[in-house]
Image 1 (cartoon, one colour):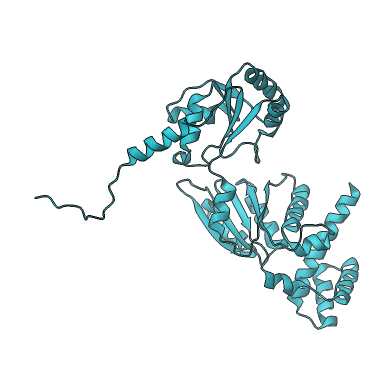
Image 2: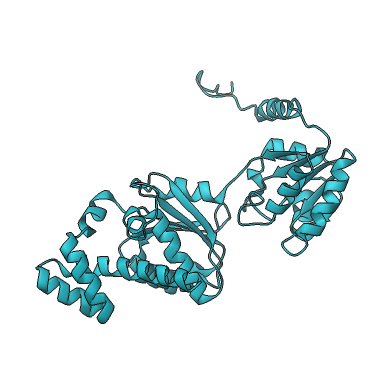
Length: 337
């Protein structure tokens, strides 16, 4: 007699779940003359939602960033739909074509290569054009690399987050943009720059490409050496890797293995913990002395002299000097503009 399964063992009936969710998706309203902004997987095709699958099979055409990438995805799903190319360089013209087709009552989906369109990807101009024409835009949400990275980072000090995306490609612009982003996430830097935003400490989320990840790591090690950084490489893919380490250690980790520098990256720069923020604060007289010394001397020398004169820890003065120099550099650049 064959052995029987325990009474409390679950009975696997995945086809019932699939049928139930598919019926729920089909029961939604999918009006004509509508642009559907559809999120696609960021690496693992199994992450596509059933609602997205339903919409992609329903629409009259799929507008996409790259017809080769999206064509391959649709083929894997067993779908065959006309494709419309819409990318950064032709978005205005392609948007006119899509608006005209929507006005004829068609349903059109827009997908980017991976993830959610119009977030560090083309699509915002298209959405604005469609809405400007008085037509409907319906989002079909899905996997987000930002949410995935934040969920795996464990930044307990973060009271929210700032998303910047990709930094500029040119070195000077990258350095300034990174300083701006760090300041936006750190209440002490916001206050020094005269910016608003309250006292909340925020996580900072950045995207980076493999050929620039080393440069970004070097900058983070210089600007915020003690901050924790969670680096997510190839999220949801076969060789996914997630590590958390101090920013000062990030360059060495990347240099240790060529594979560490391959793939697409999402970085979470953890919020400055409350204790650390309190430790950097200086009395007004100390702030003034440090500012005067920084105006005349190199950063390390200014911090060392201030620490000696004020009988304060050199590390504390050095960290505050870095912050002040960063803020002064940003203000100088803005004045030049």
